[in-house]
Every structure is written in C-alpha cells, then in structure tokens.
Image (tube, rainbow, N blue to C red):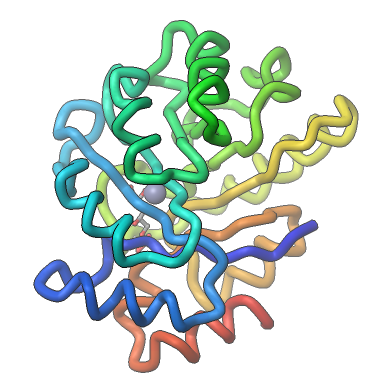
Length: 216
Ligand code: DX5
Ligand code: ZN
C-alpha cells in the first residue's frame, strides 16, 4: 500500500493562491488535489480552467483533478492543457464510463473513477482493471469541512478485496473529512492516497500537518 497525501486546493486562501501553492510545493505532499464544481452535479461552484492555468504554472506537484461536473468528457482537452496527471470523473456523471476512461487514456492522462458515498464499489467489477484510481467520496461532494462518513472503511475493504482478486492496479483514494485522527486508520484500512482540505489549510502549521499525516 502506498501512503500518499493530496492537499485539496479548495480549502486554500483564494485571495492568495500563489502563496499556498508555493507552500505545498515546499511540503512533503505528493499530489495537489483540484476540485472543479459546476453548480449542477454538486450544489456549489469552485473554480474553472482559466484559474487552473495559473495553478499549472505555479505547482510543482502532480495535479489530481476531481471533476464534480456533468458531462466531464467535454473537458478532457482542458484537463490535458492544464497538465493534469490524474483526471477523476464521477461514476454517477457518466453513462458511458468505459468510453470515457479510454478517452482520458488516449489523451495521455491517468483515469480515476469517483464514487459518491451511496454508490457501491461492486458497480466497478467490470471496469476496475481499466482504471488507475478509484476515488471514494467520504462526504457528499460539494464542500470542504464536512464530517467523515464512517461507512467508507467498509467500502475501502470491499474495494481492496476486488482489486486483489482481479489483480488490478488501481489505487484507492479517499476524499472528505480526512484529519489527523482518521488518516492512520484509513491508510491501514487500505487507502493509498488521502485528500485533505480543511485539516491542512486551516491548521496552524501547514507544513507540519502534512508531515504528520504522512508519517503518523
Ligand atoms: C469535496 C471535495 C474535497 C474537499 C475536501 O467535495 O471533493 O476534495 O476539498 O475537503 P475536506 O478535507 O475539508 O473535507
Ligand atoms: Zn475532491
């Protein structure tokens, strides 16, 4: 199991993104998690690709892009243009998920599939070998700072079992309500990558909190 950490830019100071991105560059964080929201798939709007052009120019960390939007395949070129390493699309937003994953790969990015808290991991049986990552939402997507949903541990265990049984290479990522207390439990439950927004950016010492989550 890897133990990677992806701070979520959604909780950064939007008044001074450059400062916070440069801080993450200097940190032990592995990826930078980018939450794009459209106000339709989720009841909130965050930022779009014109802003992410600047993020691309400033960040030295691989970009883990989480699209909380309808029709995410419309934005494959935009994701590619901002240098996304990982393009995460929601299972619930894709009628033709297999085609969408192939299109992301054709564009030269890794493909992640994201599941809302109510969506069972068993729905991935027939696509798990084709994806690079499964992002399990541990809150209902749309906002930072929400309470972690405990059923996520059960989903991690079932997904880990499926990945091993199918000899798939997909990483397991968990997003929402991750903090210093549950991070070690999530890594030992089988998560490879943790996303953390508020726990990092609202802490007193961002660099130290990142170090603590990764090494706890
Ligand atoms: C929520 C986003 C998360 C969010 C996590 O819809 O997908 O990435 O930024 O924030 P915290 O860690 O504060 O729950
Ligand atoms: Zn996210």
